[in-house]
Length: 73
Image (cartoon, rainbow, N blue to C red; front, top):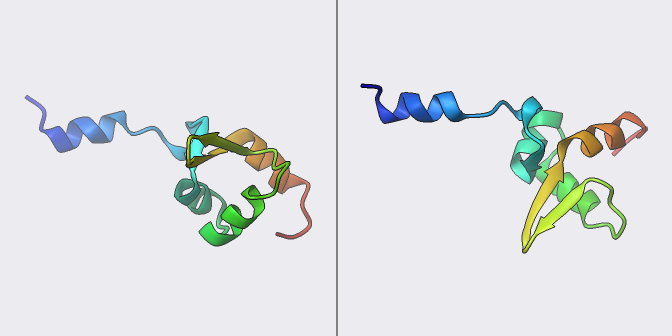
């Protein structure tokens, strides 16, 4: 029988395979601070934010595309 810790580790999806990231995951993934991601995603027409009620999620692919065309953040 597998222990519970091992089971949960097997179910963890790598960040680069997730469709949506939490702000904290997006910060870890990109190296950009949580505060900066929140600041950018507060903009009215932010292309990579997805609101689930009051929970802010970051659309990973759109976030990557956004960062690719930015000179600075």
